[in-house]
Image 1 (cartoon, one colour):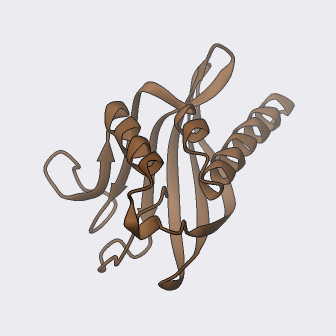
Image 2 (cartoon, rainbow, N blue to C red):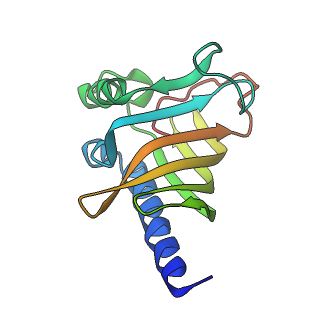
Length: 161
């Protein structure tokens, strides 16, 4: 890998680490600011290669729905998040899949530890990102989160994955 490629991979990795920290810290406004205006946030159900337009997804949000979801979290009326879950993510295996001048596709794995009044849960994910450079900064144009157990009953997934 070239020096330029290593620098780009480091920038992407730091972006993904920052996104994970913002989610863990419930810093919703800062997390929302990471999105492009045409962003899509997708968590498929029952597999990973489904068509979200014709099959059920856990989450399939366009940019306005992302803003609505964040607004709901700010109300304090998400009863499954009272008190808020304590979250910690471990992100690994960051891979650059495609890299253009202003857009790149990236994959990473994550383990999410959630502790709340109902108990403790570990969520395993593979995240796929389309990142776009806007005014010099990376932004998420698409994030697909494939839960390892997305074909099983999910009792409560009321935080950002």
